[in-house]
Image: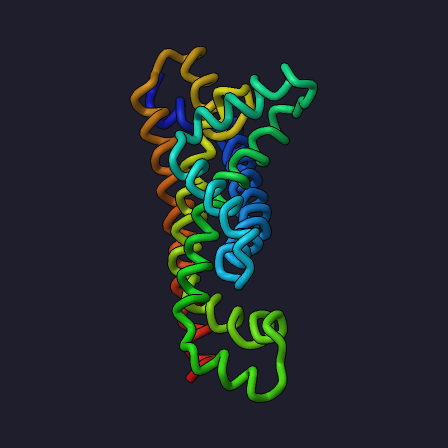
Length: 218
């Protein structure tokens, strides 16, 4: 079978898998951002009681392999009565994992905002939550955009791991085609090119967002 004919026949299945890959990455990014913001705030607010749970969580998620986390959520939790569909387990695990990295990006960005901003806000009578929400976070997001974009690009590649729980994303779709055609090299290369193209697309969006935010703060 000619390579181009092979790729033409494989294209519809791989495109479907690519759609699931994007769904996983974007859904996990949204979930990770929400939890990551809460973790970042928990690690900088002046209340020590919330520091250590957030610190332990971030250390745990960053210090254990994502594949192990997927196995714990999908295969381990049902033993204690908590069960998820493969799709939900994949999105949940990727979100939990991404939140740890995003929290560090956001925390560093928040701490990177000058202390004078806090002092000026307090002098205007703003409370700590108001200063954080209306003054510091908008500036921190601009600082954190590059590192958060890197996390999204990493998520696109990490979605390949959810194939181990039978989610038909790009990698599993590719494996299914290989099982029928017995042509692994061209198909794996094609899958790699798709991942690369997605990464380039998000890198382009990242640069445009950075330029727009830079103009807004000039």
